Image (tube, helix red, strand yellow):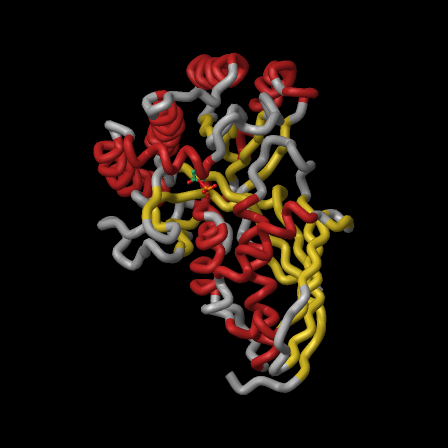
Length: 347
Ligand code: PMV
């Protein structure tokens, strides 16, 4: 790196959340997935991160400040600091750079939407942008961004690209890798128009974190079958995405959601993150689909909230379903998102 002696400035990135269709559940080593996954990149649920930086060659000690929504946040700050030190072997300039990090989410804090994918990817994109400013480089290396985001949160590796991203080596897409995600855009146009209405059944903190959930897969008696099934589902959903086969897409997506939660219920100790209203929402979506012949499907994250997925051209029909689902949501909250094209550099 041919570095100037002092470089300072501000970088700002907006990076979205994503929702997995084939789920990553179980990991090993340094954040390596036990099976491949694929996700829709979202658009309206994002983190915006701004970093003021001051790089000085030979600095012996650097300072960090972390602000969340404009206010100093020591808990988040400690996590960010730990993450940044864990990647400073790959980004050595960090040891010589003071950072003031200011982050905010487009969705309310504790709204039941996990912010780790959007926040980690936004942070990493800012850090790579700072590296570019120090070295006088223009283009962001997205593969590197995905790789470093993965070290912060596995699913964050997929937020770097839209409309879909695949993470984890598999036979269907040979260039896919365990250490970073790759974009998948060979899908039929209909999938680019998909909505993801996030029905917030509960915004309370989860009883079992994703980190603990991944760890419980180590002794889950169904783990090996599950990992095999994920490979099969990925190959099948890729074909469905390419050919525009909505029915097959929905069949796999819903089976993946049920499987994720079945794995939780089959862990030792077993646990359940679905709430009664999760099941009621799922029943209503499935009944509406059958009765009205509308391609509307659901998926779940590691929590009680339901993601309702459907192509844009059915939006007006879905309004009626939403009217009935809103009473099952905490404070009537539905976050209306759509498939997006990935992060953007601001300013
Ligand atoms: O990225 P993590 O460690 O928060 O794990 C995410 C796990 C799921 O959201 C349940 C599935 C996925 O692939 O995103």
